Amino acid sequence: MGTILIVDEDQALCAKLEALLEPQGHRVRVAASGVEGLEAAAGAPPDLAILAVKLPDVSGLDVFRALREAEPKLPAIFMTAHGTTEDAIQATKLGAFEYLLKPFDLQEMMNLVTQALDLGRFLRSPVALDQDAGHQGGDAIVGRSKVMQDLYKAIGRAAPTDATVLIRGESGTGKELVARAVYQHSLRAGKAFIVINCVAIPESLLESELFGYEKGAFTGAVSRHVGKIEQANGGTIFLDEIGDMPLSIQAKILRLLQEKKVERLGGLREIPVDVRIIAATNRDLEAAIREGRFREDLYYRLNVVALNMPPLRERPGDVELLADYFLSRFAQEMGVRDPGISTEARPLLAAYPWPGNVRELANAMEKCLIFSRGRSISPEDVAERVTGQRPRQTSPLGEIDEAIRDWARRALSQGGQNLLSQLNDHVERLIIAEALSLTDGNRSRAAKILGLSRPTLLARMDKYNLRTETQVKTS
Ligand SMILES: Nc1ncnc2c1ncn2[C@@H]1O[C@H](COP(=O)(O)OP(=O)(O)OP(=O)(O)O)[C@@H](O)[C@H]1O
Ligand SMILES: [Mg+2]
Image: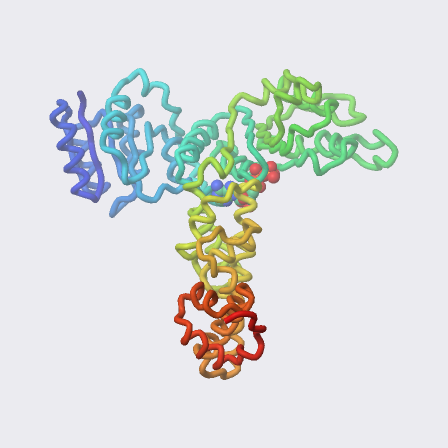
């Protein structure tokens, strides 16, 4: 039992929650705006706050910050209809207990309230930051699925610590995006963020890139070179594709993690450095360890916080959201109108397994946008430019739509008239000729499969000059 403050503009929702919570013995205070909420809290300090992220006056996150000043361990459950990454990360970072997407299950809310009030669980909530860095920069991470929501929370928890983070996941799942999000929400935001791609750089160069060298360390070392790790001092270094890092360099990175020092090639002394390491890989590191390609001790040092990127096929619900996001982003970049995705095309997008994950989806949307020439994205666009297959029988006529459209567009722009009857006649002639050829010119059978009476068929054959063309065997 406790005092619960609910702040949301949606009075119907507030009333529903109140009606469920009061009978359980909780004291409930309801407010419709941030200011009202803070006033209510001043009168009766709450044990739990249930806050909408979006309020008519100030943000729910700001209300939470203010409430936390009076009660630093106050748990909060956030509610939002929009569910942006930023909000979820910020809320978790501030120490929110949970973050629910509207519409939510009322029973789920009731369970969360019980858990949040339970001090034991609450004490495990993350440490609040003294001063919010307030970094909003960077690309949005799009996705409303449960796994992605959990990922945002994990980012919010990991970011403000200095812990080494290992991001794993298939190619194109957003590992680099997440590495940047961790950095942007860390205490080192605004300091150096240096990216090193371990596969893109040859082994000999990688070592000198990372650790630097002294003048004369090797032939060609004409002057001293400060390595990337030293350059990142005070900041963060992102070791991308670390699964491909050569063993000799792995040993040096391990040393960096253990002793926080680097030695330049040909150098005589060790230089202390303070860097946070974020690493990413799409490799199976456990297998690499078994095969002796990756050091087990380094693996444990890196794997302090593990963030696993779910493949897109495991969160089909996010596909449409991402597709809409990329389409509008590319349209904006190209300065064209966002054509939108047709209702018929949507299920095709969600059904495709996306082996290249989000990167493949982004590329596909770019192609669709270029080829759509302003039309909304059709199932044919998706079939041709995404799945590389014919549309799966959504319409057996789908494949000729494009040809007809092209023809009509050309004909109309050249002032063509009577297009409808022209096309009707053309199609009718083709189909009748096809039926006659299929039945070896048997008019009765042809009429039957075409669903016409025999006299009608004969009349059409006259109209289209098909009598002379067909070899009549029997009639
Ligand atoms: N959830 C997401 N929301 C928005 N954009 C995303 C998301 N995930 C990935 N992207 C975009 O998809 C592209 C690929 O992502 P990223 O480069 O982070 O993948 P990766 O996991 O590092 O892949 P690789 O292993 O091939 O390097 C980028 O353009 C990135 O911005
Ligand atoms: Mg990458």
